[in-house]
Amino acid sequence: MEASGVFSNYGPLNTELETAFVDQLFDGTGACMTVCNATIGLMLAIHHVAAKPRGTRRYALMPSFTFAATAHATIWAGLTPLLCDIATDSWTPSAESEEELLAKYAGEIVVVVPYATFGNSIDLDRYERLSVERGIPVVVDAAASLGSRDIDGRQFGTGAENPVVFSMHATKTFATAEAGLVYSKDERIIRTLRQMSNFGFDDRIAVMPGLNGKLSEVGALLGLAKLEGFERIVDHRAELANAYRTALPDFPTQTLRGAPAFQFMPMLFPEDVAHRRKDVQAALRDRGIGSAAYFSPHLAEHPYFREVCEVGPLPNTAHISSRVISLPMSDQMTTDEVFEVCDRIRSELDRTAS
Ligand SMILES: Cc1ncc(COP(=O)(O)O)c(C=O)c1O
Image (cartoon, rainbow, N blue to C red; front, side, top):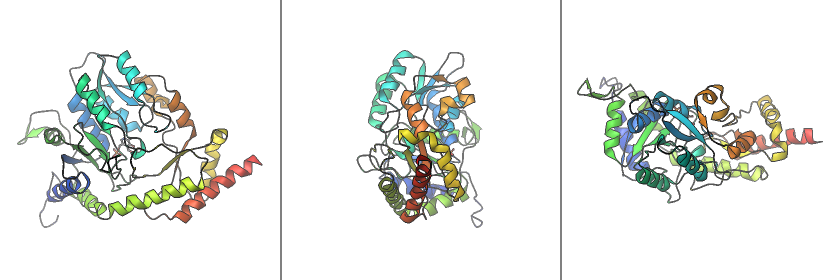
């Protein structure tokens, strides 16, 4: 970097990283562009496919069981999030709930933003059909899916026409610091988004909406370093997930489509002890063990989103969200450490049961 004097603006390291992603993860098909984080990637893609003159009410259909960034990105594009339910088994957006809201708000939904929950793959063919047949664009929030394999064994998103947005945030399986990636089979979409991400410039003249969404060369270097040995990281985390399932067989997990790249271990408390979640988290914390409860609250429970979103019926979301816990995982963690976490959970639950 010092030698070339190039520190950003789609420099040689960034180009190397984008090329490596397409070649190594996406089977050499399609195109991708880095962004400084996935939230900006979502904002660019959603603005590109759905932003129209203001005035009429326009909705972005998305699950309530997702991270705040999905909703924020659509609000920045001038849209109103319309929150749908999830399926009880996969925890991904429920097709029935989406269909119900597509019918109820016919003509008012300008983009669908499904979330591939915790790296679990969703049926992208169904979304491609939906966007072609109904003329409603789709932008896929795949924040946790770098390294996730779909049922055909390929990186989730490979060959998708609709933009698919991944995160490389420090908390993700493909952890760097702050970074994201937008992929599409359609190189023209990526070319346009790249321009938008560089102030909407064509030869330093603004010709379209823009912002600064570029990844620095330092960020690209972190990505290149992570890509080396990434498959081993994904495999190791799959082993940790198996250990969690073995140690907590009464804690339901997502029904998987393909093989996700586990960021953490999402599990549900058995119904009769779900009200003990906070106590269990405190007991873990006492031993220096971090945990979280993604997504509790879910979007419709956040004060800001409750005020600005339109909310459909969410019975499954409410049920899953009230029982969910995100148990720790890292590249260095061992299966013995997983068993230690699970023992601690078990002893806290047993302590109060007796
Ligand atoms: C579902 C979802 N969407 C979007 C994002 C935003 O990613 P980033 O932190 O790279 O902006 C996240 C980040 O955790 C996420 O979980």
